[in-house]
Image 1 (cartoon, rainbow, N blue to C red):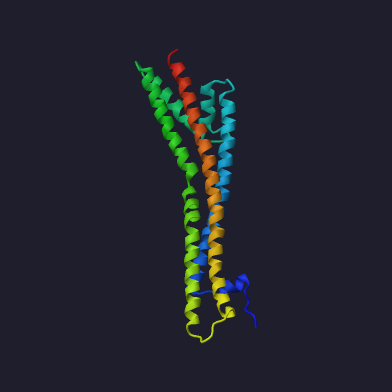
Image 2: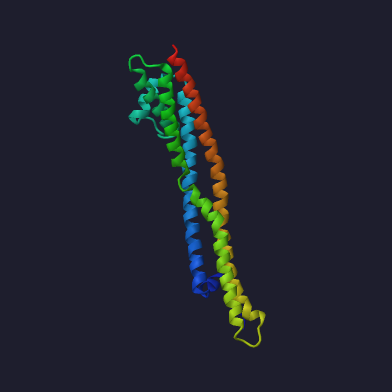
Length: 225
């Protein structure tokens, strides 16, 4: 009589602790895929918004008119460069209207406002990204814990029999190894997603920083006119 070594049977016949480990890994995997899809959509929207705003910004139009479009909600994609531009232009215009204001002081105020907006955009884009790193780094060890526990139970059961055979050990070891497989199943997509999104995020933040410096140069030239 051969033992049933199907995946479903191995999971249902596993010990309670190993089943809890498998359940935790399954939940972590589902949450990871949800974060991956959301992050992919968010970063794609950020790239599109940056492309469209840069096209409008460098089209040669009036900056005050562009600021009106952004603040009035007529601009299609909010956030990102639009938020940085809005924060800098608003602060510069507010300080520039004050009598006897030093142009350098107005420029510094605009730069501070843009850096704050940049930090907020960075936090918004990085949300849930550490979760992928946590799942990717801990899931293999959680699965390994379930494997060690299952194998330990299998060998403990062998102590109660006079003659051990491979047929008696195989089901217990197989169900224990399922936990390792589930740990890898949860970790690999999370690691790949984290590395890819981290690289894309660095590129987007780099574009924001370059825009901040370019807009600061424009404000500096205007302040000396």
